[in-house]
Image (tube, rainbow, N blue to C red; front, side):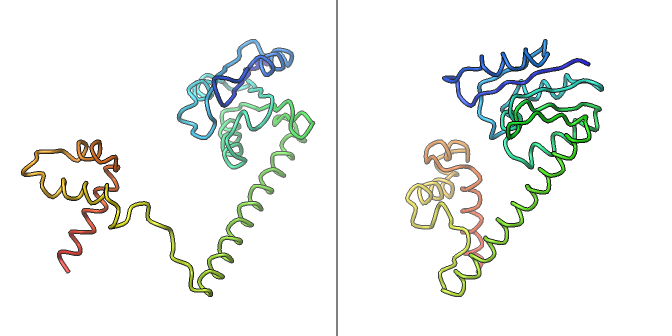
Length: 199
C-alpha cells in the first residue's frame, strides 16, 4: 500500500522538518509539502496536486487534521471525495490517537467528527438567530453593515469618475485603481444611484 505524505505550515518562517520526519517514520516515501495558509484551498498548490496524483488503493498521511483541512466541514468533504476515489486517510495525531479511515474505528471517528461539526454549526446558527431576535427587540438590529456608505469619500469620487467617463475616458478598472474601491462595489453603487434617479 503506497503512502503519500502531506506536510504544511502556515508561513515561510515556520519549519516543516518535524512533520516530514513523522511522515517518513509512518512509511511515506513521497511527501508533498508547502508553506502556505490553509484558509483557501485554491492557494494550496501541493495539496491540490496530491489530490490529483493519489490513486485507488493508496493512502494519504498527515500529522494532524488541521494540516490537512481548514475546518471540520472541509475535512469531511475531502475525506468523502477520497473515499469515492478508493483512497484512505491516516491522521497520526488526532487527540492523541492515530486515525485511519480505512478501518471501522477510523470511519466511526470520522462519523463522530461529522456529528460534532453539524452540532457546532447548528449551535452557531441558533446563537445568531437568538442574537438577532434580541437586537430587534431592543431596536438596535440594522442588518449587515455596508463597508461603503454614501458619505464615503472614495466611493463618491469613484461614482463621479464613472459618471464622467465620456469626458475622462477612464475604464471601470482604472477608476477602481485610482480610488482603491473594488469594481464590484462601484457597479453596485452606480446601480443604486441609477435606481434612485428613476424613482
